[in-house]
Image (cartoon, rainbow over all chains, first blue to last red; front, side):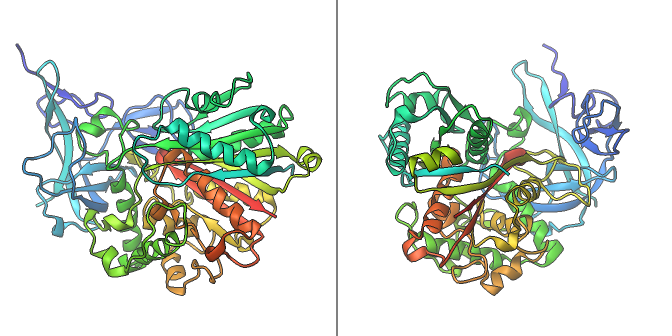
Amino acid sequence: MDRKQVAFDERFLTDPSGPEQARLIGTRCRSCGVVTFGRSQNCEHCTSSQVEEIALSTRGKIWSYTVLRYASPPPYQPPEPYVPIPAAWVELPEGVRVISPIRDCQPDQLQVGLEVELVVAKGWEDEAGNEVMSYAFRPIR
Amino acid sequence: MDKVMIIGAGCHPCGRFPGKPHTAIGREAVQLALDDAGLEFKDIQAAFCSRVFLPQCTGLKVLTQFGRTGIPIVDIEAACASSGAALKQACDAILSGRHDIVLVFGVEKVGSGFLPPPNYAEWQIRMGLCQNPMYWALAARRHMHEYGTTIEQIGRISVKNHKYGALNPLAMYRKEMTLEEILNSKPVCDPMTLYMICAPNEGAAAMVLASEKTARRLGARSITLAAIEHKIGRYPMLNVAAYHQSPVSDYSCATTDAALAAYEYAGIGPQDIDVAEVQDTDAFCELEAYEHLGFCKPGEGGRLVDEGATEIGGRIPVNTSGGLISNGEPVGASGLRQVYEMILQLRGEAGARQVQGAKAALTHVYGADGHSAVAILTR
């Protein structure tokens, strides 16, 4: 059986099995300029179909943060034993903010404005045994 | 603008009722509302049932307990704003001229802990990003960063709501709590702690609506539904279940859109509101609702708390019922429970929670992905 690396959702992440790190996908509206996360056929604000797909920057800043003190419900697989997990709204230069776990970061290091970079890594396995690649952001060292 | 009258209201207590089916909980609220209106179920010409986690045909199953009169009965869902959305549909059914007497009720029976996450994408769930409280916590942290709002100000809203819940026989939690107890309760999603966050639970509330002409003909004791607006946020926003925000500096949110539309329809402004029930899914949600409803300017919600302005006796008492924090959130019923409290206030029947001379009241619900409904009631 060939185990492949597949995107958690092909509308949101470019093919992770290529040579370069996968990128988050965005949509920019040519009519109103709004940028959203994920590939869309229509602008989520103004409804225009004059939209273009873009690759979102891999670096951004924390716009707000929290720490998840309890494990999210299944089918999410929490770390065992559970450790508090930082999560944040990451603001990207394109003018969109994306929700993201923050990894390689202690809760007391979190602050608004912290510069972070995209990490694409295995999230879980699908029924076919493929590695499903998801994303997180981590502080830029 | 044409107005619809509320001629009957009823509310089942909020709490947990093991072994009591939701159809029994719903039926009791509906019976109370019909009795209050002096009507029978066969007088109802259309019915709207608000529910979120209960199954299909909930409205039908509750109401066929009274009998099958053939009227249209639909379930309405708009996340935590469901009952406000249902109230609008019920009101519009009368304003359309098709019906004179309409029933709207909300009912819910949901367990404790994190709500089931059906409105998250599969990938959001698998990434562990489906805890509703995290979204409110993120909003609170940003507001603290931008405006210097403190966790103590947020905590004091929970103190207030616990104080009033202790005076409300319908509330689930009827115990006052100190600021220290609230701040020191278990962190759930930093900076929010357990006692700042509402619990989903069980309950039901019902209203009988009538056209002005029919209310007069019946000689009913009426409260005017001066406005009811339901709006959805026009940009991807910081919302429960949202995975992105596309911020635009001059856009606020669905609450502001619904509130402005409601004030315009009713022909009054926020300064004319004597008492309000707002969506305190957590204590910060209430603070930002003060700003979005126009009770104060953006960023000044904390100051309103410091001034005691939203306490009974202050200039704009908020959540005299104890809010979602004390009542819990029987999701589909919550907004109509708020309306019930405002009806008590306007009728002068709120007892120890009474706001003297209340003439204009506002209710506000806010739900996942950007639903908001705002109602204005007057006497």
